[in-house]
Image 1 (cartoon, rainbow, N blue to C red):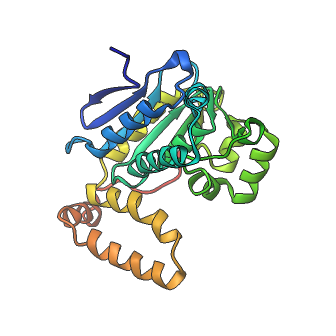
Image 2: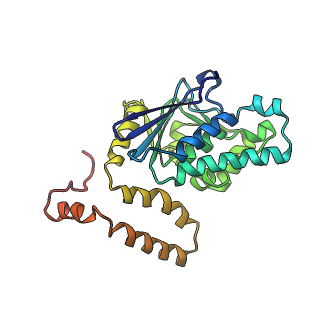
Image 3: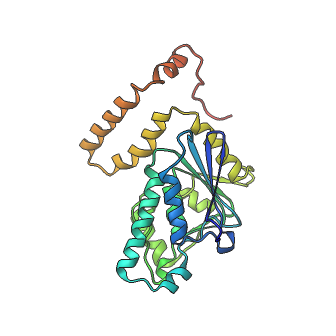
Length: 264
């Protein structure tokens, strides 16, 4: 029996999804995508946030090029492969549950496409980002032209694909590929520790508010302004008449809620 690509565990109401093919730098083959799709299609109802991690030195080195080479896929075959990636990664991004990705080492090609589907990205200082498709004679197929280009801009994505340039963790953070960089003098915590802390904090938010944040903002950004404002109003009306709104607002009114203030 072959080893599964994902290791699944839970810590209270946090799901922990670990990429588990370190000997292949967690490269993504068809079975890996099927496992990702299956988990994010049926997340247990009590899970309020998901931490995505990886075994070994690398988060994900992208498409399993050996499988691609050996299968000699036709254009139609590979179109179906791409559609499978799109379905799986859409379920991460738009599934309604916040996903925090802990990154290290290679976040390359399809690995960057996978990371781009997460809502919060926490990078170890060892992390590096690249889109080497131009040098491999291939093209992105897992959603980078939509997700990653929206993060770093289409022109930056073109440049990275043409040149094969590699970005380190700090450059990646500057462009938005990472929201935090860890294991540094300024932030000595590990990416896992900070990712888990953020997951716990996010899991404590109102469920309906989290759902609205991770399912609507990206979609609204694709709309024309008039339609986007209307959609925002509809979502606000749904969320702000939700079940636990009054109790949370009551804590604020009665000065029991935390105050928004700068970090010390």
